[in-house]
Length: 639
Image (cartoon, rainbow, N blue to C red; front, side, top):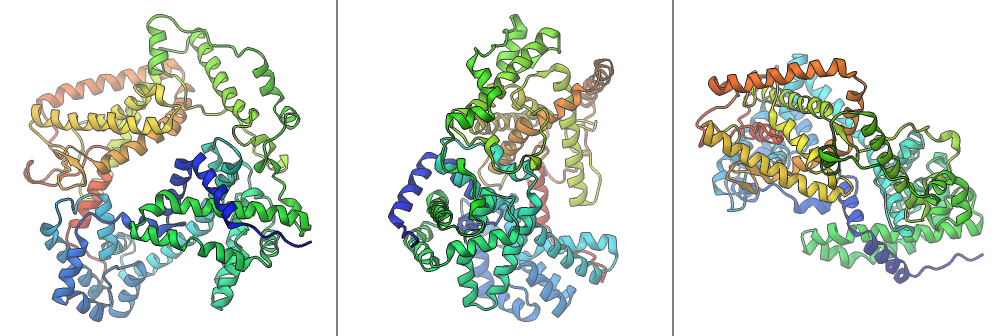
């Protein structure tokens, strides 16, 4: 039987329909892979250090400094880990570190020349500057030397650790992310909704190790073929179908997957090459727009088109009877299940949907207002417990109803053998109500963890202990307050993650801004200052901090909060209430004591108006890292 010739126009038309249906989900998905350098990494070239590094490069070039450093120490302007190791081995560690110090000094000297929108402060600028100058490698080397006591041994351990970490990320994380991405795009072809829970479907099916072996073996084969140059190009197309095959059936054996991909691509490599070539115009436009077009259209468009290509040749492979093509048996990845198939695996859900869903009896008075608007129940009385269980029951079947109606992929029809499935226990629901005791306990947990985080960062950066924050006790109120604001005030936004993220930025930004204002006006002190950071407002908030707040808010709402609440509920009230009472009394006492005797050992230095301070809010890591990036390096590396 002759294999079918595909129309590129038809494939691209179908891909555009998929993008139109799931645009933002697929764009963000590709952006995540680009951020982790898995695919489309060049698309993020538009996101550069906001410090004026181009002026620095010109300054170095004019003075002949860069050429001198390259010749004398082998340290390039974009000092990679390999540059650093090569220079250290060839020229010696002292010379290499001296070269990096000189480059950093030039960077600091150029900071007053930066553009109106530029800044050398912040974690984004700090990260780029740390890597571009090679400072980060000296910091790591110094940290390892503090334990080993010998610079040469530390250099070897550092190189070994880097190789192991890179290998682990490649085989255990990067390859898995590619497979998951392909799965999302395949489901997007058929269904109107995509579920975030699909991110961990490989773990739930207990196929992680098999996927790691398959993708790892494919990577090794392609690497060996690249040694032959021409063979590498050919095999790149031979193995094009591997991640799609794994995405459909992660339970297949590695060599079965690779052989099937080769057979499917027999006679179609040139056709696939021409398909890739057809995106050349889009790639040029992406380059002209500084990769903005790549991020918001070209990248997901290419993956969606390749998904259509796989779907078509999957059908051809099954018709041609190619060996192991019958194992591409996820039928409902390409068509919606009929009523009979759904009724066979979802009888419990259908039974619940056929009868009137029991609505939880609403709580009355103040308890009703707290539960409906803020997700708070005073304590787990029989009435409130019944109310909560009824709501959780409704939420569970509302989600499963989408699978029954064919709006999302029916997970129960996944064709992996039942023995491979993980037995699921009770689901950790994020759309829950929190008791007063749980909220108070979580307030102190987050406040104390925040304090430990800040103290640890300051100790690493400055090699000294400082009681970070506004009080004397081991807690930072802004962490606990921020967590509770997200859990309580944004209760009704939990069902819409995008809305919750935006509101988290707004509310936490307002909290941090007015906390800074309050401390400056009524306490006469400034505990953090973001002057010089990208998009800062009066030095009290900045874009980087708001981004951290958004990520933290999502983590607290959908993961940390429910998990901690489950743990706290297991503690008897007669135990937890006295503990929380003591903590509250100590906290109030600390507030009163601090009002008379302020905490002065916060690690602050210099004048409040002029100094660059660590943040005592969530973006402390950014401040600490940026401060490390800007400090001269005169470190003992055991030489």
